[in-house]
Length: 115
Image 1 (cartoon, rainbow, N blue to C red):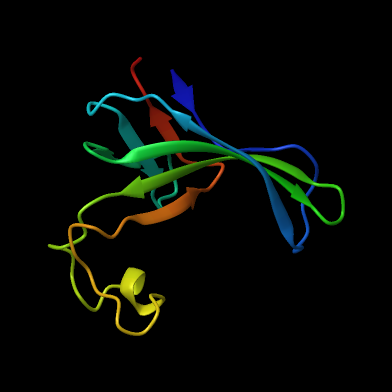
Image 2 (tube, rainbow, N blue to C red):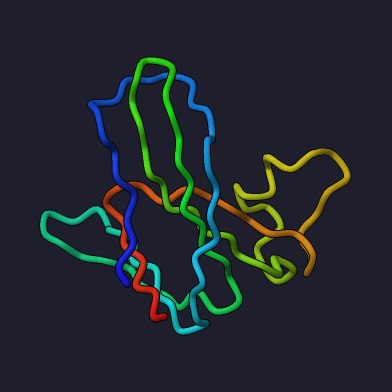
């Protein structure tokens, strides 16, 4: 199965409400591919491993709808402690095997998820 974020109305900066979250049953061999800034198509791909994949339905205050793909990385213990990921954590939180780092994938990124 191939997954990507879909935007279903021209979007402007607006607040969104999450209306549905669904876990995608994916194997450890699932692969996320992120497009790189080159004048031609180049992707950086990596196995998701123990990560989790979600489909998230978002509805914007101006009528936009988005079917977003979100990825969650487990066990952030070995990540660079000064990473941007950890700059947004509440005071007292740190990288460890219990913290998931979750993010939405832009509509130009792809997830290959064997079922």
